[in-house]
Length: 239
Image (cartoon, rainbow, N blue to C red; front, side, top):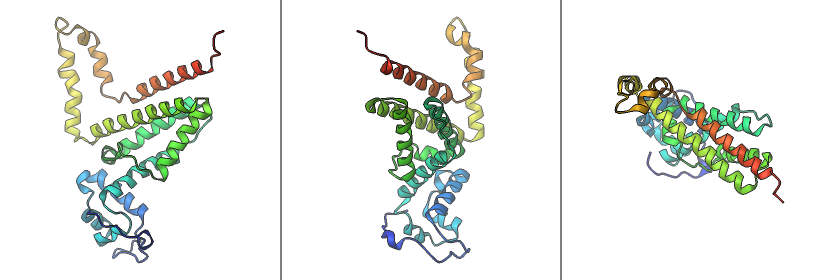
């Protein structure tokens, strides 16, 4: 999609497409997510989107300047889907753990989109709401502002990094995923204790553990460290 800016007031199309569909930003993003999931990153073109929507491809410029603008909207929609399913309980640690796991699983539900978008900063409504929400949880727990921002930064970057890593793995063809998982059995589990004593001693655990995401454990470690830091902050100074 090449750069072509249409004034916002002129963007929205009122007439239905030739297939009877009335275009909207929401419909275009939903269709883009579906195409990415089914066909990968190559599907994110104005021509493919136009065909899928039954619309003249140029009509998409009424809603998005270019494919990068659309990609930011896709990233923001993934964030919005997470927020819509999350309900806070008032327990800051449990709430952040639940939110992080939902962010991660939401990315794995759309791995191709996650690979393309997890590293982007959208500045859009859902991302802004997420930043406000997470900072509110941390400040409400008692973290001073500077600490709240540092923990927010670590929490979000950890979540997005694991989302991108695991989404990239999920997006691989099944044969490639199975071949990589088999390396732990075929190679690591057969290394000699004479040359690789630590791998040999833990091989059965490696085979079992390396097939799954480490994100839940990494998230728990981060939250445990954050809780320890909060205890330090609350501890009265020594006299």
